[in-house]
Length: 70
Image (cartoon, rainbow, N blue to C red; front, side, top):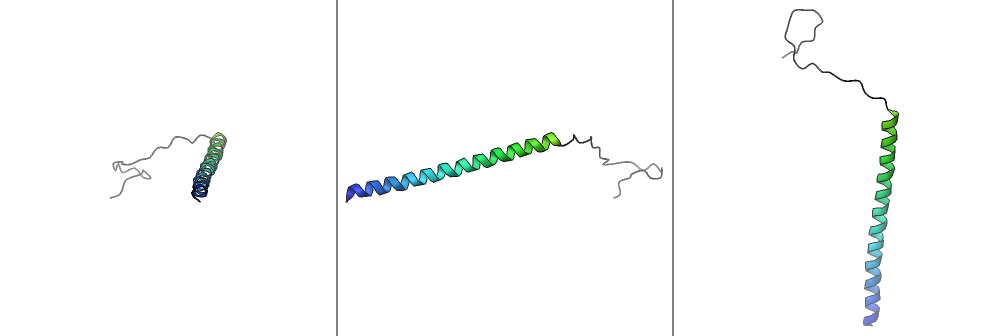
Protein backbone atom coordinates (compact mmCIF):
# COMPACT_ATOMS: atom_id res chain seq x y z
CA UNK A 1 0.00 0.00 0.00
CA UNK A 2 2.84 2.41 0.75
CA UNK A 3 4.47 1.85 -2.64
CA UNK A 4 1.27 2.96 -4.40
CA UNK A 5 1.25 6.23 -2.47
CA UNK A 6 4.70 7.19 -3.76
CA UNK A 7 3.55 6.61 -7.34
CA UNK A 8 0.45 8.73 -6.81
CA UNK A 9 2.50 11.55 -5.26
CA UNK A 10 5.07 11.35 -8.06
CA UNK A 11 2.33 11.48 -10.69
CA UNK A 12 0.73 14.49 -9.00
CA UNK A 13 4.01 16.41 -8.78
CA UNK A 14 4.88 15.51 -12.37
CA UNK A 15 1.50 16.68 -13.63
CA UNK A 16 1.91 20.01 -11.80
CA UNK A 17 5.37 20.56 -13.32
CA UNK A 18 4.13 19.65 -16.81
CA UNK A 19 1.23 22.09 -16.42
CA UNK A 20 3.59 24.88 -15.33
CA UNK A 21 5.92 24.13 -18.26
CA UNK A 22 3.07 24.26 -20.80
CA UNK A 23 1.72 27.48 -19.28
CA UNK A 24 5.11 29.20 -19.48
CA UNK A 25 5.65 27.91 -23.02
CA UNK A 26 2.34 29.43 -24.16
CA UNK A 27 3.11 32.75 -22.47
CA UNK A 28 6.49 32.82 -24.24
CA UNK A 29 4.90 32.07 -27.62
CA UNK A 30 2.33 34.83 -27.10
CA UNK A 31 5.02 37.32 -26.07
CA UNK A 32 7.10 36.46 -29.17
CA UNK A 33 4.06 36.93 -31.42
CA UNK A 34 3.26 40.29 -29.85
CA UNK A 35 6.88 41.39 -30.24
CA UNK A 36 6.86 40.45 -33.95
CA UNK A 37 3.58 42.33 -34.45
CA UNK A 38 4.94 45.41 -32.68
CA UNK A 39 8.10 45.36 -34.81
CA UNK A 40 5.98 45.09 -37.99
CA UNK A 41 3.85 48.04 -36.87
CA UNK A 42 6.95 50.13 -36.15
CA UNK A 43 8.40 49.30 -39.58
CA UNK A 44 5.16 50.28 -41.34
CA UNK A 45 4.57 53.54 -39.52
CA UNK A 46 6.11 56.75 -40.77
CA UNK A 47 8.23 58.72 -38.35
CA UNK A 48 6.23 61.36 -36.55
CA UNK A 49 7.10 65.00 -37.19
CA UNK A 50 8.62 66.90 -34.30
CA UNK A 51 6.04 68.36 -31.98
CA UNK A 52 6.41 71.74 -30.31
CA UNK A 53 4.11 73.00 -27.62
CA UNK A 54 3.74 76.56 -26.44
CA UNK A 55 3.39 76.61 -22.70
CA UNK A 56 3.65 80.33 -21.94
CA UNK A 57 3.55 83.40 -24.17
CA UNK A 58 3.50 86.96 -22.98
CA UNK A 59 0.72 89.20 -24.25
CA UNK A 60 2.00 91.47 -27.04
CA UNK A 61 -1.25 92.77 -28.47
CA UNK A 62 -0.73 91.02 -31.81
CA UNK A 63 -4.00 89.46 -33.02
CA UNK A 64 -4.24 85.66 -33.35
CA UNK A 65 -1.17 85.16 -31.21
CA UNK A 66 -1.52 82.26 -28.73
CA UNK A 67 -1.71 83.53 -25.18
CA UNK A 68 -2.00 81.50 -22.05
CA UNK A 69 -5.15 82.44 -20.17
CA UNK A 70 -5.28 82.28 -16.41
